Image (cartoon, rainbow over all chains, first blue to last red; front, side, top):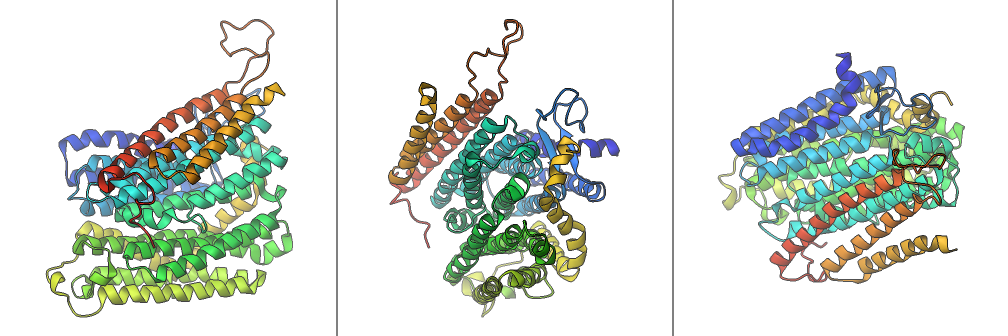
Length: 523
Length: 115
């Protein structure tokens, strides 16, 4: 058992990666549901492995894995002062994101078994899904900044191909895919340029080592600006959000759910860069306020654009932008007071807990909402809210799941959105009351727009063309039910999650010394 | 001074690439713009890796007492070139699909997604 745990960081990458190349071979023999089951089992295994690692990391501290070394834990072989091998460094924050990735990709695969059954080219679909999962794990676990770039590019290529997957029917998915491809290529190349700036100055690629020798020169400032801009763009924050509604609405529903987690991996990288790489060497007040302003703009513009949408997935995509704003707000407040121990202790840590907890909550309820939108599309064949109506009569499970998801995103107790939003309101109010009031206002507007969706899609008399509509197949119901259970559980017992998962994640971000000393020993 | 010429070339390539992305409407030209930025970044990396008077790290051929170059930037550039090929192939194939479905490559006309 301990052998598995030692090599778990490599295995969790290797398992979906190898399975991705097995899928086309298996697809030769079994073209229908067997493929989906195989992928679900593989992703289920990596979910189990992630949970195993989480259990270890939360009780014993960060997990280090050196690739190609004589021993997985040996970062500095004799004679070396800096690590030269690629190192995976998984701390509280990394494993927190890893759990989100694992849960979302597993449920996405389960949902796909029925949802994608009628499509051709399934082996390509599942290969790309597995590659996307691999890349997300890699982005969250790696401790090497060039390695991060490689995984970012794998994630971009896989998600572009998945967004454009349905382009045999119409041109729109290809259009959305093109936009996302341009955005991701620019983002990844700017990350690479920043890697060059770091390497030129410090001659290392390991993030912990760069952090320990960071001088904050003019070049570091340029690298910081490049990284913050492009990672905020990849996370879908206003004003670089133009790709988000297109990509989220045109991708197949389970892929949209995974894409949400993929943009959160970029958000994680943004936090990793500002907290672990730079920490208090940068002017935390200025960068903190920049992130707060990005967050407030995302919240407000996202929700106002969402209210006027008629396409159900496009509406939810704008809400995804708006919810990303909450995370940026919470963590931005933490960053702004990072250099001030008193304020950090009294509300900074709480604000960050709210922001980080919201990442997980958002992945769960937004995933659930996108899956219910997919269920509606599966049965009605349209995403236009004006053409739907009266679906609650025939799709009772989907209706219940939609209500749970909508209540969670609007921040209504006892669902998980309430738990994290309340933490954000309370702590941000102590920082700046106005920000907290804007956040509450956005929440009310969110509720308004989901009431509209609920009314136009589910309520009213049965429509002529939807007389024969049935409940969606079992695998889709199972995936949605699991997410709904997680949402209710998080809403009822937020303390369990905040104390055991979120707090270690926040501490891993704040304590830069722990991050660097895990690689370099006591320095 | 003359040693800085590669960096000037990097800036020119990046600038041309960004100009193409912002001002050109043709999707193929946008793909070219991305390739220009990519080449600029690769040139930047490879220039960082150049050390005057040092030799390539081939152990059997290296003369005694001369410093050898750690070939990390070269390895990074190779990786980045390979990734760039995949990116370019994907972006061009998507442009092909768009041309099939829309009958144009003008980005002003490829605008069914809006609002």
